Image (tube, rainbow, N blue to C red; front, side, top):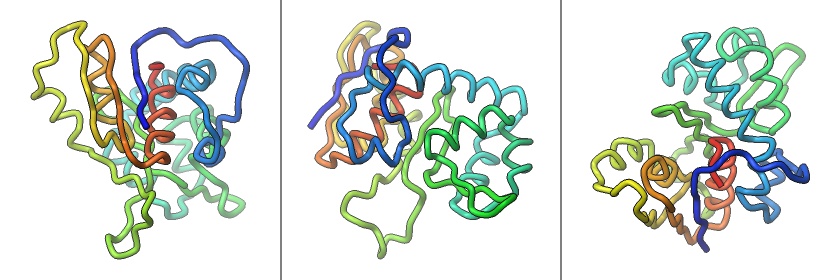
Length: 193
């Protein structure tokens, strides 16, 4: 299975189920998702920048453990917390606590959602292991402006999304359908289709 990503503005269209747990069980293209997710991703990036929350702090919050809702709100802003709850990335675990259901990272201006880290001995077959080195690897690649790129084994799509900054089209391929669905979600979250 594969996806093609190219940069363009968010596309107006029919609203689909945009909660990540539902997307993982349904077929939706990045173009279908972009109408709602791209503005949410832009707003979340702006909130992270305004609050001074760096990737280390974000990674500590999105570790799967319960944290006070006020801690999330202070780091991300109230509107961003609501967005993450709406899209199923965060969940309310107690009256005043939230937990991340997925890992959320802010890398080189991209928001990347993927599975929470797991011990290697307890990893299901469809687990999406993040390639956090993807941004650094992409900077080492010589992709001519407007050229084509191929990301084989895209996982959560971090390398494909980084390559999409310079390539006209990026072909993202993975044998794991769940990985492609997370990559589609990430493409839409970052304004790519």
